[in-house]
Every structure is written in structure tokens, then in C-alpha cells.
Image (cartoon, rainbow, N blue to C red):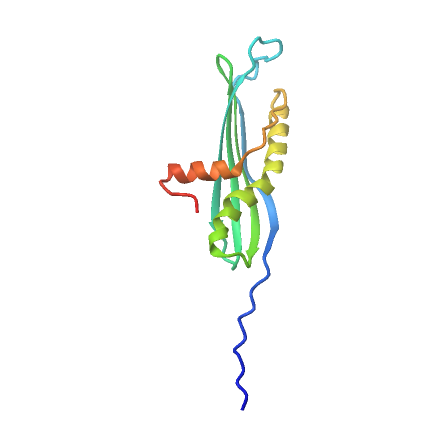
Length: 155
């Protein structure tokens, strides 16, 4: 009788895919609609806060990743406030557990950001202000900052 080696459990192939993406919430408040920014000596001061929220979906290997942008513009008085939550549902399969946070907090938001940027440009323009084009975001740094503010460390 010949002995046989037990077969290794087949490892899942690594896969990252977007199931869907959508604007979950958008609020644009034009605080001073009569204020004109044309010809002002100083450009408006823009304060942007960007946060990544993660939620595990009911389905196995499916996660909801939300980019939450809070933007305020002001000169000597407030001009506008924009709040946006843009969400993507992602399938993430076959990656080691130690890579999951990297994918969820860095790679998934990186894929969603161009859509957030486009929505911000449109909303601000439609609100009567010059287009606001957001600079690229280093999601690795954002992830580290969120962890530090929560007292955690980067894995």
C-alpha cells in the first residue's frame, strides 16, 4: 500500500474588485450666496478633512469603504460648506489577513478618490464658486494619521 500525501487546501486566488460605488450623501451649503470671489486679493482659505470608514458587509469577502470629505471655504467670512460621503462595495479575496487593512484603508480609497474629486468640482462650480480641484491624497499617510489619532499603530 502506497502512502499518499494529503493535498494542501487550495489557496484562493487574490482578487480585488468593485461591486458598486455610489454617492451616499452630499450636502452643499452656500453660506453667503451674494459674496463674490472675483477680483479678491486673497484666495479663499480651504479646510478639508478626509476620513475613511470601513464596514464589513453581510456577504463573505465584501466590504463597504466610504470616503467622507468635509470641506469649508472662507475668506474673512464663511463662503461654503461641502459634506460628501462616497462609498464603494469591494470584493476582497485571497489576501493574507495582514494585508487586509492596507487594502481597505489605502488601495480602496485610492480607487474611489477620482470620483470624489469630480463630485467636489461639480458641486462647488454649481454652487456659484470657481471649481475646486482637490490635490492628490497620500492614503498611506492618512491611514497612519487615523491610526495615531485612535492610538493604534500601522501594521
